[in-house]
Amino acid sequence: MNISGQDFIFGCSAIGAGLAMIAGIGPGIGQGIAAGHGASAVGRNPGAKSDITSTMLLGQAVAETTGLYGLVVAIILMFVKPFGA
Amino acid sequence: MDMRMGMLISHEPDFMIHGVYQYQMFGQEFWITTTTIAMWIVSLIILIIAFMANRTLKKATDEPGVFQNALEMAYEALDKMAQGILGGNARRFVNYIGTIFIFILFSNLSGLLGLRAPTADFGVTFLLGMVTFFIVNYQGIKNRKARHFTSLFEPTPILFPINLIGELANPLSISLRLFANLLSGVIIMGLWYGMMPILANIGIPAALHVYCDLFSGAIQTYVFCMLTMVYINDKME
Image (cartoon, rainbow over all chains, first blue to last red; front, top):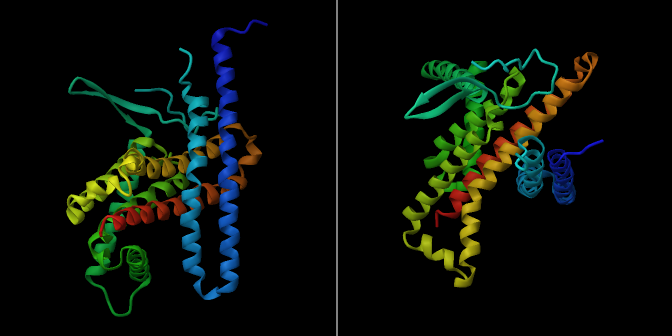
C-alpha cells in the first residue's frame, strides 16, 4: 500500500484532533467539583436553591471554555483541514 | 445555485454551512448561506410574536389571559435576571439584554424546526461578542474616563500585556463558547441522522434534541447574557 504525503498529513491531523480532545478532562473534573459543592450547598440551605443553581451553572459554563477550545481545535483539524494543500 | 442543498434528502452526514445564492457587490463575492436563511426565519418568528405581544399588551386587562400571562412572566424573569447582576443600572440595559436573549434563544431552538442553528456559525456569534465588547468599552470610557486605560497598568505596569490580552480575549471567549456548544450539538445531530439506520431515527433523536437543542441552547443563552451583564457591571464603577 502506498501512502502519499497528503494521506500522511490527514492521518496526523486525525491523531492531533484526538489529542486535542484530552482537553475534555479538565472541564469534566471542574464541572463535577462545582456540581458537588452546589449539591452540598443546597443540602445546607435549601431555601437558596435557585441562587445556588444559577451561580453553579455560570461557573460551570466558564469552566467549560477551555474544553471547548480543545473541541474547536479538533473540529478545525478534522473538517477544515488547514494542513496540506 | 449550488446543488449541494440536499440537507434533508441525502444520507451522508451533513452538518456544514452551505451556500445558496451568490451575488457580487463592491467587486466582492458574497454568499447567502443556510445561516442567513435560518436567521430570516428566526427573525420572522420573533417579529410575529412581537406584533402579537404588542397587540395583546395594548388592550391588557387586570385579568390576564394565557398569552398576556406568559409575556408578563417572561418580562419579569428577564428583569429579575438583569436586576440580580446590574442592580440600579438594570433599567438602562434590560432592553439590549432582552433583545439578545430572545434572539439567541430562538436561534438555538431553531434546531427543533430542522434548521441549522444560526448561532452554530462563528460569523453570527463573533458579531454578538463584538457588540458586547463595544458596549463594555463604551461604558468603561464613559463611567471611568482615563481610569479605564490606566487600570490596565494595575497592580504593576509589568502586568500590562496580560491585562490587555485578558480584555481582548473576552469577546473571543464568550463568542467561542456559544459557537462551540451549538456546533457540537449540530454535529451530533447531523451524525446521528446521517449515519444511523432508519429505525434508529424514530423516537431516539427526540431525546438528543432535548439535550443538544433545548438544554444546551437555553443554558448557553443564559450564560451569554449573564456574562455580558457581568462584564458591563465591572465597568460601571
